[in-house]
Each structure stands twice: as structure tokens, then as C-alpha cells.
Image 1: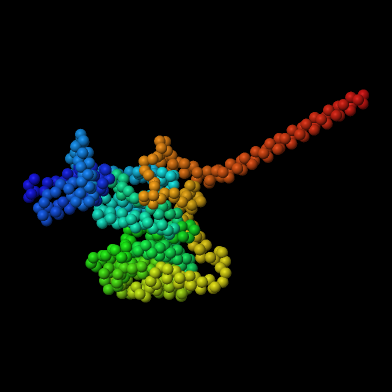
Image 2: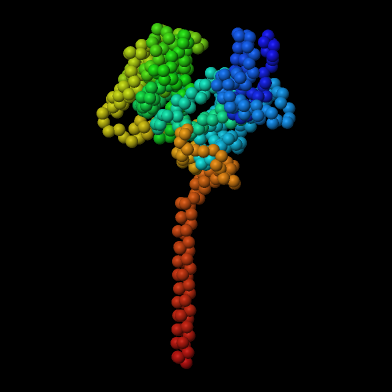
Length: 492
């Protein structure tokens, strides 16, 4: 090979690597770019397979296996990147309700963004799960892929009722996915509609539950770094569940180089708006800020800082205090406002240092709001929160857990604990599982199921008793007629 010329990469080998789930489209493109950069820098023209090994996407044995597959091919083995992208687009277009995706059957779409789609899917155990699939293959960078994988890496060992459970992490047809617990409920963002903010005691109750889960994360050395209303779900019983750990980091391991920004601008603390700036390193107090910014949103129906651009918002985060809460919502108690604004202090040392400390003060404020007296059940903030969740579910057109038939707590376990693929028996495919779930739900709604059948069984003995009474009456009638007939006979 002429060292001054870089030949086209063997993209068919890359396609085989995708089809055999060694890499995805973004990783293949990354290796093609690395090959080009390496040639410009060192004048070294490596084969694409060598780059895949160098970048640790393949082992030498994997590469040998792909070469064997290539040699066994009898058809066309020349492809370009457009053809590979076309195959990727075809797989994405097949992601529709009713379609199978690996060991899952897609039930319905829950939401989508520029890089991924989240579906409600049905597992092999005939239960719902949330299936998050990365689809930004043509535009996703390797960094996006790593963030996607990192989310599962962070979440998997965290076993807590307030943290969404990971069921499986994998790749199918070149598409990376995470299967996780399906959380019934609504996001904290959905709890607030227009200017209809939550009451102070209800807001504090919701944040208390979320702070407990954040504190559990911190005990494992993990900082979320993207606490916001959209990333906290609230179950119908009022318990909060943390979602989306793509920006999470280990407080003693991860070091960020240079200045920059991490997190969502409307909810990020100064030390994340200006990383490695004058506000110090990211710490557990950074997540306390996120909890405070979320509390601010629940109390006011708006973000702590408003601006015409992200740059303006970030500048305010670093230099301006948030607008007083009681100016926006006069119904908020002064103690609630003071607690929230303390979470939003610029200096970390002036905030509550941990979620545990925050919750200790939330308890004191809730006690103050209740007047130290017995709270009636209908005035209990937890009860009011569950009603607010139910109303949000109705607005969304959704159904609660009791309306959906078989939506149980997922029996799936975390990676490495046992759910094996490829063990579905013949005739027990996903389509059957989906119909079975629907039938159970329909039976319950229509009064069928065990309760309805028991009523039917109980009704039959009543009908039998009536027939016996009628037969007895008829028998007595016949006997009386016979007696009267004998009386007339003997009278003659």
C-alpha cells in the first residue's frame, strides 16, 4: 500500500461489526474519522479493522471472526456509508407499537427527543417496562453513546425505591437500549399546570421524597448534576422516583478539564454553569441547589431565573439572586420561601450541605405549617399530593395502576442477576403476551375475573332453591286434591 495514499475503508467489515452488535453506527463513524486523522498525523494507513481493535471495540479474535464471515459471503460485499445509514434508518422506522425489539414487544411511545425514544414495552414475563432506545445514530457522537451507557452504569447498583430500576442494557440491530422499570405516575413538571402552583406543604412533601433518593445516591459517591422537574417522577402514592442519570458523576473520581457547563441551564447551580470557575467544585450541595430550583418551580410555576437566551440565564445564575417567591405567589409561607431560597445561594457553604440536612429542615417547616396540631386526613399534604398526581394523570389521558390490569412491580432484576434471553417457548411470543395483558385488564373493567365469577356461582343456588319450593308447593297441591277426592268418594 502506498503510504502517501489512504484508500477507502472496508465499510463492509464495519457493517458486519454493526450487524453482529460489536459497534453501532456512531462508533463506526468515529473509527473512520480516527483512521483519517491518524493518517494525516503519522502517514500510517491502517485497515478499518485494525482501528476497531485499537479503539477497543473489537478484540483480535473478534476481528478474525468478522473476516471469516466476510470470506463466507457470496453476494455483494462493497457498501458505502449511505447504504449503512439506510439500513440504520430502516431499523429505526420499524420501531412502532406492536413491533418486536429483541426480547421486548413495543406497546406504545412515551416520549422522544433528538437522540432517543422511550417506549412502554412488554417483557418476556408479560409485564410493562420502559424501553429507552438511542436512535440518533447519524448525528450522535461517541460522547453521546458514552453518556447513554453511563446512565445505566450509574443506576444499576443503586437499589432504592426512589431510583428507577435497570433491567437490562444491550444493543439490538445496531441500536443501543436500556430497559428499565416502568414508573407509573407523572413528572414533577406535569404536576404544575399554567399558573396553578402547588401549595407549600404539598411541594415540600414532594421534594422530601426526592431528597431522600438523592441522599442515597450521595452515600454511594454519585452526584446527579441534572436535578429538575422533568427528571423526577411522582408515583400515584406520592413517592418520588429519580430518572435520567446521563450527567451523573462520581464526586471523587471524575475530573473535568477546562471551563464549561454541565446540566440544564434553568436549574443548574453556579458551579455547574461555570465549571472550574470561582464557585468551587461540584459537590452534594450542587444537587441540593437542583432540589431547591425544582421546589421553586413547584411553588411559582416558573424557573428561578428567566432570560432571552441561555447565556443570559447563566449570567443571572452566577450574579443575580432569584426573584422572591412571595412576590410571585403570595400564598407561600415565609418559612417555605426562606428554605427554598437557602438552597439557591450562590456559595455552596451557605446552602444546606446535604439532602439529609435539607430534609431535617423540611420536617420543621411542615410541622410549623400544620400548627403543631393533628392534621385532618383530607388536609394531609401527602393525601393532597396523591390527588394532584391523579389529576395530572387524568389530564394526560392516562390511567392509574388499578385501571391498567396487569401492571405489577417488575420481577426483572438488575444486570447479571439472571434474566436470560432466548428462552421463550414456542407459541409464547410477545403478541400473545400483549393480548393476555389486555384481556386481564378488560375482564377487570367489565366485572369479570374472580369477583364476577364468584357472584355468578353464588347466584345459582338461589335459583335451585326456588325450583325446590315450587315443586314442594305443587306436591302439596296434588296431595290436597287426592284427599278431597277420597272424602267425596267415602261420602257417597
